[in-house]
Amino acid sequence: MKIILKVQRYNPDTDEAPYFQEYEVETDPNERLLDALMQVKRFQDGSLGFRKSCAHGVCGSDAMRINGQDGLACKTLIKEVAPNEGDTVTVEPLKHLPVQRDLIVDQAAFFEKYRSIKPFLINDEPVAAGERRQSQDERMQYDDTTNCILCASCYSACPVLDGNTAFLGPAAIAQAYRFLADTRDLGFEIRFPVLNHPDGVWPCENHFKCTQACPRAILITKRINQTKRLLEKYKTKDSVS
Image 1 (cartoon, rainbow, N blue to C red):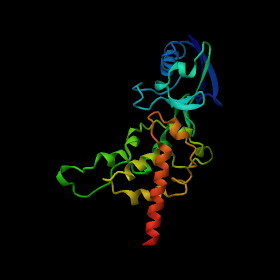
Image 2: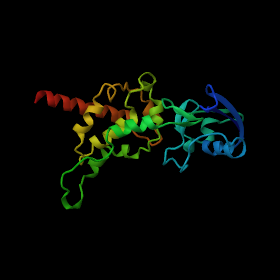
Image 3: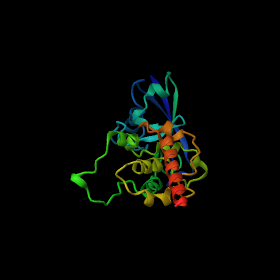
Image 4: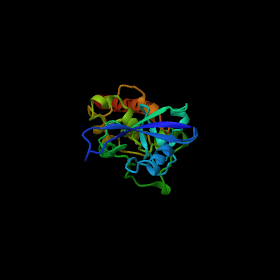
């Protein structure tokens, strides 16, 4: 079947503003959108810029907006976005991040916010018997958050960032919860100032767009609300003491 790829193009060195370019592509309904983009790159327009790596939904490199929804090109089948012959698939770069070239965005701000929550186990106590043990039930309290691939789809989908670019963002908060809920971690007070900041966890308005966009089925909105409750519990305990 033939489809039309309507791709947002932009080269900051030569273009005054982003624009759309259309490509006619012969594809199969069961192929992935990434395959169609690669076909354009290889046989029609070598100047088209986009990221890719593993092509199996593990690295998160090819996150983009597809027909107005955020997701991975390698996990999006043609039949899901273009069910009929001649359909048009609109492809744009992720929102809330500067465009470097076409579908490639600068993720520096995204990763700066991610690093700010100290996304690693904090515990300097001596280790008993060579490891810090925890039960399966304890692990399951945060298990889904360990599947994050930092694709930034949730960050792009977040409506709060439309008006508040300083918001910490769903990915960083979900990863903060991953460690706050870990019984082996002792870094709550270290992370508290970043999460409790006016641009930390509190701007979240429960739109659930982040959860819907996540290609790894992480319950991001739920984890954000759980983080809020942990902070409230800590502040209540601190005020009482």
